[in-house]
Length: 112
Image (cartoon, rainbow, N blue to C red):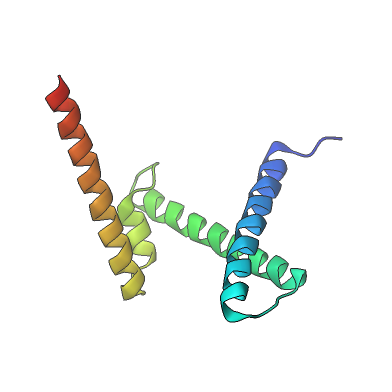
């Protein structure tokens, strides 16, 4: 019997996350001359996945509370309101992204 599409998608996401976490851990281990076990990478991957699911659920709740069906930058910034450093980095990233969008929009208008 085939797996449910949602379950299959979740498994693919976890696999991609495991691969990425493994790559990051490998890079750090090379720099620190350290070794980790596959169990460590699996546990770290599970931790990151669980945190991402919790984050996504909370951000969706913020959007829903604001009466929107689509998550916005404000929802993400609300999520990190207690982490000033992270909020600062994300605000700067959002401003840069918005600036690039404006530049592209102006460039496309100029071509017309």
